[in-house]
Length: 402
Ligand code: SR1
Ligand code: MG
Image (cartoon, rainbow, N blue to C red; front, side, top):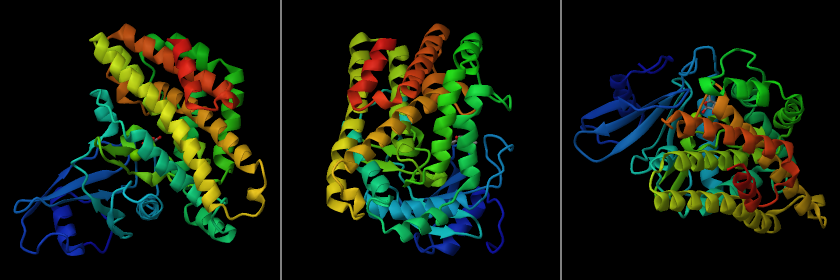
């Protein structure tokens, strides 16, 4: 039955799991629910009526769920499954386990993390995660530096660049992150109506901003630095107070490290905006936004500390060991981080794929204030990207825009 590709329904998924894996006992009664809330794929949770066991099946369709304008190669599931397996080796315990990848059905079967929460949802409920910065900085240093020319044999690295060429998903980011927020060329930006004039002036008419965004776009397309996650927002992270699991690396390809780090920073700042706009009690609000601010600082600063140690321990390239290279290389990563943080903040505010942290702010004035602040911060990050050298620099900008 599963020897030719088709898009599975829930009852076919239970059959699929029985046929392909020995995860459940042969006589267990299974049922499945489609639980996907992402923009691209179908995600099923398969559960047993006879035990506590459960598993996730993720299947790629030929077009995106968000809009069938996006025709996508189903090869993205191979990329996702292989990248997760590679990341498990580089950053053990920080990604879900993969049990099966099936190139016929374009499906990946993986660990069910229902005891975790999607981080964006948790942040919108103003939950705090003191271990997150430590976990995510380890994940980023190990997976980014660990796949770069700093320590990977250069022919092997070039093979990886080839293996993870991901043209269609990169095209989505090229359009949705680096082009459409600035020109609305395909007329599919989602602009909150009271923001229309502001967006016209601050984004569509700002030619200096366009030039810097264009430079960043060409860096994204031409800087095969590391096997990046490619979509490391808080909707790609499962979390508990003790555990962080990064999933969904279907946008992975060899790109600039700062793309991942900038995404994490930007999405924390969306949580900050949500907290400021929606938490009524002043003490609770302060506790939450202070934690977000500290986390932004820690993510960047812990990345730097761990980068330093990882580099010294693992560097193999002879010339990369030259005095001053490590600092120069880090500097360019930090510049990319600031630029991408800004680009992500703009595209999630005005582009086709928005974030609930902002869209769920019910009070119109508060939402307008939050959106303007995101755009103002973002422009500072992009235009002054070489000056963001430490975590506190982001918070200085945030405070100046309040
Ligand atoms: C057409 S896909 C829109 C967005 O969803 C994904 O999560 C990526 O962020 C992409 O840009
Ligand atoms: Mg995703």
